Length: 213
Image 1 (cartoon, rainbow, N blue to C red):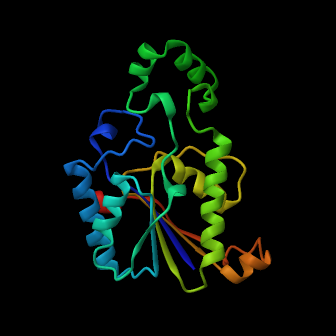
Image 2: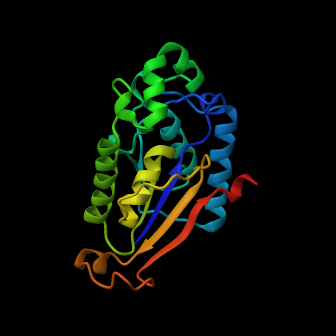
Image 3: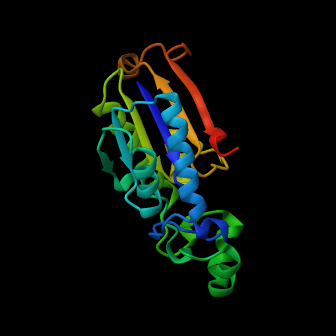
């Protein structure tokens, strides 16, 4: 089975350094162009997914619609693919948050802990969400399937960590419309065998945004 994970195209808030979280913002003109470029790239590669999932937030749902418009596959929207909820910081830059919530921002920056931010999603919550995504993909699909997930930079880091089986979530500067592609032997995954045989589990693309160059 192949699993492809894709971040949404850029938004005006991205360009301004604003924390979007669950804010339902649309793609900018540049974001639409990025999605169109990825659509053309996948068409040239003759990529033919069997299943497509997307965050329901507009910036990602629109990216999914543009990229997948040549595929005869419905888009299934999953709340678990939403970006990490940044609570009180939603729509703010860190500089603006420091003015509006000085103590909260100081605590957040000191400990790098979202639990310090009112109504934000903690690390455990988002990691549990990422694990649910991986568990669903493994449970609901078969070898030979090509599964495409459209999501967000923050939650993608957690999904990658869950798929790799690491307890640590590594920081990756995920490019807008970047592609992560994994190939797994689903039967052996379910049997929990051949864990050290790297022919059974392959990383084919990682944060690949070659279509933007």
